[in-house]
Image (tube, rainbow over all chains, first blue to last red):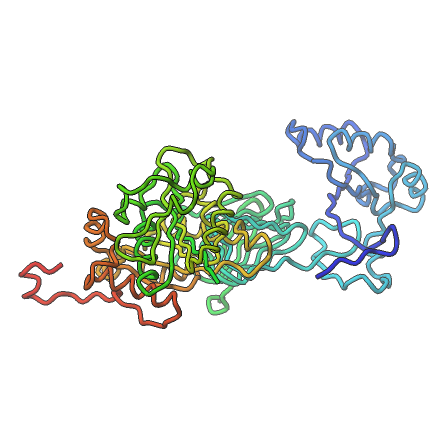
Length: 251
Length: 271
């Protein structure tokens, strides 16, 4: 592999960023401030300058025009960095742009014809945190055993591993985790908050699993039907559930 | 083309020095000019196992610090003309081992015509162990068939794959060999010990040999004579098999089956 010097001083490419959706159900600054304070629990760096897309689609249409300067100031005080607004009415758009935010047209943009360099995107379910542009890298793939003390992090995508994950290893993904072998170490899916992420393994024997920050250890072992079987781990409400993916055991 | 082989494990007390001593002796007895280096600065014991502790004048750190030449520090083994030992220092601490120092010594040994350079690593994953594995072309991972040893071996494999010179420069990866030591087929049959297949399933590297648990090893250390010289014992035969496999021969695994002794044998004290 060799690097060629680009002929242009600047290149424009389609890229992906991970952004937080800030879905407003009220426009009142005091109410929003109180809610954010409760959510962050007083931790000043709960959000670490994360990019934020403000979703105003849930606001009642009759609400007074939004004080964008005040809203931006409030989000920044909690270390969120608002960059765009989604589901705004056409009447709001000029005001939004005047405050330095972009309009995120959401699903409409994905249907547009893309120029040649863009790869086809794998569409994730809408419930997953969406990105500022329409594409995600499909998955990080690892084909060698993950050994004790090693840590793998698949940022912004799924993680697929075709060899064993040994005790003492740690695998992390913002998306789901798929292990086509034995999973014996720690697996943390939905690391950036995606509660829909799941963990799959051909032999589910992990030390610890976590989805969107909710974790579970298996100190009492696994039930006989699930021990060392193909299984999936998912987050149901606030509980980690382990289910078989073995067709033979489905009723 | 000289080959640098590190004998390492992660876990302590599993048989690295015992194996380094017998392995390098085995290579030398087959006519290959071999040197074995003790990287355990401060806790040296390779010279004890080789039986040359009373002939140590200069050591690895002296050579790195240019206080002595390699010729002055190398000790010729009393059992075999082709084998040389480079002892570690008993008094200095590990920080005296520098990467550039180690590299220059290894280069000098290659230029002196050594075919095999065996590096006996200390236990752990810190500086001493790192220095022993950095320049390795091949690695022998010594593992006892027991859970903490297997876990530590897994750890050291990850470190070799990340921190060796070959890994960092993107060259052909270090060739890994699994050496299982202190194996007891009787305990495996009684489900008290991991089988060699269990160990391989976790570590996933080719098996170069199995050394059975044996009292001969203790006798060997006490006498300062590597176990491979005790002709006829199971340990000596097992180490000879390891050397043969390393040199390319394909041999069946021995000492893996437990034969329950008959009634008469048990009466007369067979174990």
